[in-house]
Amino acid sequence: MTPNKPETNTEDPARIAGFEARIAAGETIEPKDWMPERYRRQLVRMMSQHAHSEVVGMLPEGNWITRAPTLRRKMSLLAKVQDEAGHGLYIYCGTETLGVDRHELIQQLLNGTAKYSSIFNYPTLSWADIGAIGWLVDGAAIVNQTMLAKASYGPYARAMVRICKEENFHKRQGYEIMATLSAGTPAQKRMAQDALDRWWWPSLMMFGPHDTDSPNSDELLRWGVKRKSNDELRQRFINLTVAQAKAIDLVIPDPQLAFDEKTQNWLIGPIDWDEFWRVVRGNGPCNQERLAARRQAHDDGEWVRVAAAAYAAKQARAESTSEAA
Amino acid sequence: MNAPFEYLLRLGDDRIILGHRLSEWCGHAPILEEDIALANIALDLIGQASLLLGLAGKIEGQGRDGDALAYLRDAVEFRNALLLELPKGDFAVTIVRQLFFSVFALLQAEALERSSDQELAGIAAKAVKEFRYHVRHSADWVLKLGGGTTESQNRAQRAVDDLWRYTGELFLADDVDRAAAASGFGVDPSTLENAWSETVRDVLARAGLTIPDVSYMQRGGRTGRHTEHLGHLLGEMQILARSHPGASW
Ligand SMILES: [Fe+2]
Ligand SMILES: [Fe+2]
Image 1 (tube, rainbow over the protein chains, first blue to last red):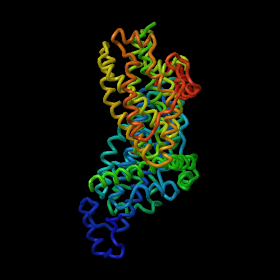
Image 2 (image 1 turned 180 degrees about the vertical axis):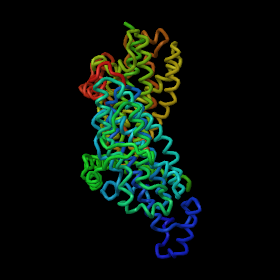
Image 3 (image 1 turned 90 degrees about the vertical axis):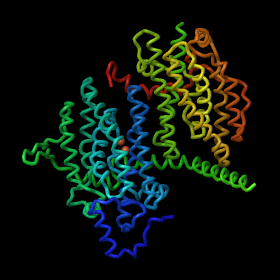
Image 4 (image 1 turned 30 degrees about the horizontal axis):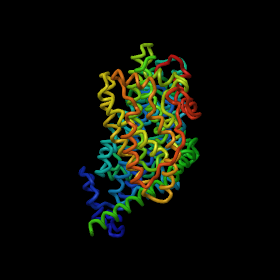
């Protein structure tokens, strides 16, 4: 069932040292290789959170597919949400190389024990939110995933390379929606600014707590699962995005935003970590709706999955009897 | 009467309306693979609709493009068959409807590859490849549902029973169809019925599903006499475009 799961008590320090030496030398860890149980578990945690995020992320954007304002926009949005489903599937398959199957992970999502990115617990209130999500949320994901594409675990790193190409496309598409709205009618411009106002801070929170408050970070960095700290990645995203907002005449909703000549960084005002933890702990505006929607789809689809399995079993039986005959 | 224009509206509206219904599944399908597959089919249909309505606008010559035709017509001006506007229902309804439509649309597209209009022939040629996949996807699922469990068999049978009376409309030919066919632009849908019936009956029989006796085939979509469902669908689809007259997106 779980061929790659090493017996935890056989982890002698020498083996761990050898493993860490491989990572320090920049080698890639593959499914067949020995790995410390904690490394495996951290990867399962990160990859499944990532896969869940792709799947739950379909909901806020899917909310606008039927209302997209032109046929071209409708097709791009539908294609984007379809891509996210593909990412989810691809990463779930990646976790299978670590000996965990997808159904187990989906159960954890549905019973609320697994996490997904908090950003998807915010509502999409206007069409401009579709632009803002592409630009900011996919944009932040790219900064994160570009780093993960160099992760020490081969299957995850390779998945990120492939996924990142599509996220780049999503980001361009989202930014283009925002640019169009910002240059549009006064009502469209207001829509765009309002979306930026609501999505800016949550997108900065996507990088996680400050390095000083991030419990998993040290180990993840040492094992090459992550290559950069939360704050470094966040800063990189801010620096990229401030210029983009200016270029389309939108205002970043932060009165303290200032350029620091010395570090060449854009410095921001304080992030509202109370809000961050409130949403993480389940009290964001849409936590309940998102999980309820996933559960509903799962429950409504139960009879379909059972039927498909029953049919496959009958086919397999029919084949084996015809072979025997 | 501008037969080619009217004829193209029927083609385009069938696809935009069914594409809309399929897109409602996105994020809510029974398994992730079906989120992807149904979105894929919806994308094919909306893509075709965009081209067909664009061509319709060009032929009409009144300055309406595909978006104007999709977003700024009222329900009575839509020309889709009633089958396609019915609510998505459960997965069985969605799949059985998809089989009924895809088999029809494949035959229609194969005939339209020989259209006297180069642009329509080109759209049809690409659509043939897409519809082959749609037929395979929906037929596979009809077999799985019919041959799966008692529940799936019952649900699939109920879907066939409920939807069958909407299939006759697909093959009704009127002056628009006959004029479009006579000029070599379009195809008379009544000529597709035998081949459709043969394929669909074969799939249903293999799935252990039976065809109900119906005394009357519902109709009206081709002349704008729709079910109550279409107004709600368009209310959702058109709200943003209509709330900002003249805006571009
Ligand atoms: Fe994604
Ligand atoms: Fe994306």
